[in-house]
Length: 199
Length: 199
Image (tube, rainbow over all chains, first blue to last red; front, side, top):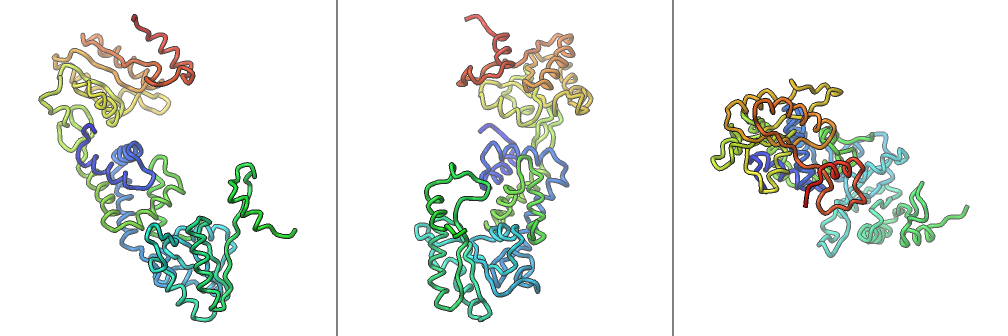
C-alpha cells in the first residue's frame, strides 16, 4: 500500500478493526476525522475512552450500564414478576422499543454454540437461576434470536427452568409485519404455519 | 429513543457524526467497542488523538503529513518537473497506486463551487502559482474529479497557468477499464468519444 504518514496509517488500521469497516471505508472515515476540527475528532476519542471507563456489566442482569444495578434492575416502576432473557445487551433495545414490556431483563452474553466452544458455563445462566430462586417470579420470556443457537438456548433454558415452577415462554416466530409471503424463506413459513392461532 | 446509559448514548452520538454511519451502524459499532478489550477500544481512541496531534498540512503541497515538508516534497527521488494537482489529500493515493507517477503533488483542498461558496480564494491556488514561479516546472497535470466542479477548476487553473509557459494537461475521461459500454452514462460516453485517439 502506498505511503500514508504513520499516524494516518495507524488510524486507518484501527478503524478497519471495526465490524463492517473495510479498507476504503476506513480511509474515508480517517480522512473525515483529519478534516474536522480537533474538538469534533477528539470528542469521539473521548467518548470511546469514557464509555470504556464507565460502562460495566450490571451485577444483577449483566446489561451494560454506568450504574449498578442498571436502570431496569433499580427502577421502582418495572414489573418484577417477569424476566425477559436476551443474548446481548443491545437486544434489550429491540424489546424496549415496543413500549409494551415493563418487566426486568437478563443478558446471557451469547447463545449456546458447541462448535464455537460456547457451553452453558460460558453464558450467564447460573445467575439467572439464582434470580429465579427468590420466588416472586411468574414468567420467563426467552427472547434469544430465532437462529439454531438461539433456539437451542431456549430449549435448554426451558428444561432447566420449568421444574422450578416458573412459566417459560418463547417469542413468536413467523412472517414479519408488513412483509410479503413471497419473500419468506421456507423455514420461517413453516414456523409461521406451526405458530398459527385461532381467529 | 429508549434508554442507553449516558456514556453509551454519547458514544453512539459521536459515531453517528461519521460520514455514512447511521443510528443502527453506530449502535453496532458502539456495542462492538464495549465488547472488545479496553486495550483494543482505547487503541482506536489513541489513534484518533495521535493522528489529530501529529498530522499537519505540508507547507509546500498541503498534503496531510507528520513531517514538513511531506514525504513527496522532501523525497530526493521524485521528479521535480511535474506537479499533479488534486482536490483532496486522499486523491494522492489513487495516483500513487498506479506506480507510474513519480512527480510532485499539490492539494487544492476542494474544487471551485460558487453555489457552496468555494471560490479561488478558498482553494490553495495562490501557493500553487508560487511553486510555478521557481521555473524548473515543465508540466502540471490537473487531476481534479471529472465532475462539474472539478472540470470548472481544471479550466480555471489552465487559464491561469498556461500564460506562465508551463504545459497544462488534464487526466483522460471515458469508459473505465473492464467496464461495459452498456452501463456507461451518456455524458461519460460523449467524453469517451471526444477523447478518442488514433490506433
